[in-house]
Amino acid sequence: MFPFPPLDCHAHVAPDVTAAQTRTLNGAQVFAMTRSIDEFDAAIDNPQSGLLWGVGTHPGVPGALAQWSEQRFLVAARRSILIGEVGLDRRGDSAHQADILASILRTAPAALISVHSTGRAKQVVDLVEKHPHPGVILHWFTGDRDDAARAAKVGCYFSINAAMSDEQMTALPLDRILPETDFPASRSRTRARTPGDTAALERTVARLAREDVSQVRQRWYGNLGALCEHAGVRDDLPLTLRDLVDRASQSPSS
Image (cartoon, rainbow, N blue to C red; front, side):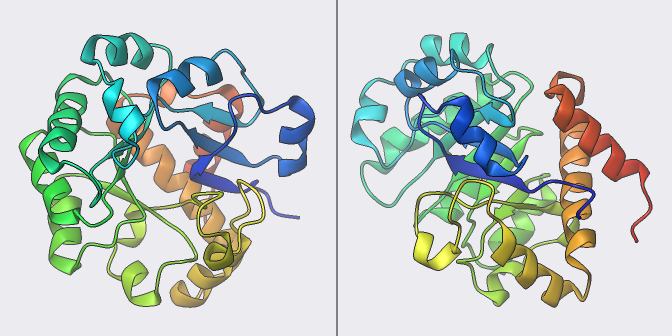
């Protein structure tokens, strides 16, 4: 039995998920992203064990962009230490998306921020360099090695999934990597049957790092703990998750 439950730092969960449904996730700790502020407002009033809700404005969802309001975002952001899904997407008006992301990076309180960059990775890194925030996690990052190096230099972390290639994964610093499923997107490629189902990713990373799966899982919690300390949110984590990241940081790797 693993000493740490599965960790999923980017997934999508229905705002009306029930306690019976979350019990099927085998104790997984899941960062549950929303696509709009409306969706977040519905989700945050449905606290569920193991889920940390994020306030999002998905750049590829026109309706989410249309309802954007900096004032409303800041009100919502005070209710969670997680922001996501936000960022830039190859679909739609890049200038409008960039204005929103820049506003989020400039005004967000202490938080973890899961950032989408599909088709616009370089532009996302440009914005993070211009408006650095200590809690940025680049979700499913597919920029090149130069982009990854620039992002790492300004303190970004990276969430990866089993749909990514070995080359994409190994371009990222091992101590900045976090796991994700992006459930339910690309289930045939990520092989994630539920949020928190990172088994395929764990096997891939264990092979690449030449480690046991248990060591990989512990490192992920340790990486998350380091990020939370850097972002100033460690003390605000849900108690179970805080205990896990603390234990991972204090325990020697087996």
